[in-house]
Length: 507
Ligand code: HEM
Image (cartoon, rainbow, N blue to C red; front, side, top):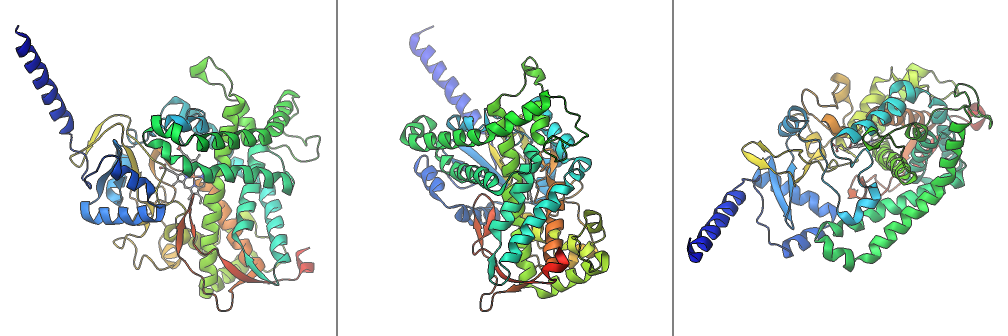
């Protein structure tokens, strides 16, 4: 064959190949300008991004694509389509996109529940978390911990009751202390908990700075090297704080103490999340146990996943309780009817009979979901949805807030009306139909759903029983939002709290 003919055939082959390759019809979206478009997108604030997504939804419909670099981000803001992909095609849509290479150390190469690919490791870690810690029978074992933390929280609030309280810090600390107990099995002192909390938080807030590594990692890794080393140093600090706790638990495991009897420190020994992780053997990797770095990553995930999410939801709910005295009065009436007006705290069994308290919590999660998007999903194989190709390298996300605010399902969706859940309950798992999805739906649904709802009901009911929550004179509660790790109140809740019973009655 002549050389020129060979070259011509080769060129035609490549042109045809790329033509067909590029012909894949991705969901529609704005034209992307390489590099400049990506840089502009990366510079946007999270608040901006949400309003852009809303505009793109009205322009392009229920599913659309945004390109950052060569990476397609696909968004679904429509309830029925979300149901179709997350429930009907759940096995395909439950993967996670790989993190940028420069940040892989944060998840120890995806060796945790939230970032591991849909496969045997994820199944093992998730099943362990649910069956050993988050199953209702296990959650019950920590009721003493909830009473302990509630008592600390109420005592702290009582000390501030003559002045104005900014509640969020106390809420976050309470949720964190509870999770530390469930994670390490120990009731640590306030200073120790605070040290771990600040190490966690520093790293968590810093991770948003690592987003730059998603774009041209070969270059950004050198340009932003300082960010990488800072995050690395923060992880080292975290490990330093965890090490004595891990050592204590390993020693406990080796001394064959009967877990059903009291431990040498006088506290009841309760099997903790860390204990369950120490018992894991990775079948796919010669049955090895988890390394210390992997234990740090998994414990850190447990503490992060359940703290800000629950504390944020608690703050939003209490903000509405302060803003709407009629809601507070109805709760108060129900609490008294079910639990009497004795001096004890509300018991977890009593919550089951508090229909209105439960409705307030659900309405809070619908109107103010702590996460407006879920964690990014990806598909395990290329699939066509509504005539569009969803490629394997795409990150896929879902508009949680938009779904809970859909006027086709909810009358006056932006109003805070717990009554809607008294008349008719809702299935937040969305298995038949999605009406709201504050915890995601499908195979990656939040495994902490039950624990989070229990914590919210327990703390909301007891906070309302203990204090009357009032607006600060001249300061209307402002429900403006600000996206951080979760979507928090732009102006944190400040309230005047008046004890409903004397300190003597509490004692
Ligand atoms: C109000 C509180 C909470 C909210 C609103 C919430 C919300 C969410 C959401 C939206 C997701 C992502 C679902 C997806 O990717 O499709 C998620 C995942 C997750 N959550 Fe929660 N969460 C809360 C509390 C908790 C608690 C208390 C824990 C555990 C202690 C927890 C552990 C996790 C884990 C491990 C994942 C990853 C699941 C997986 O990838 O398989 N969350 N959560």
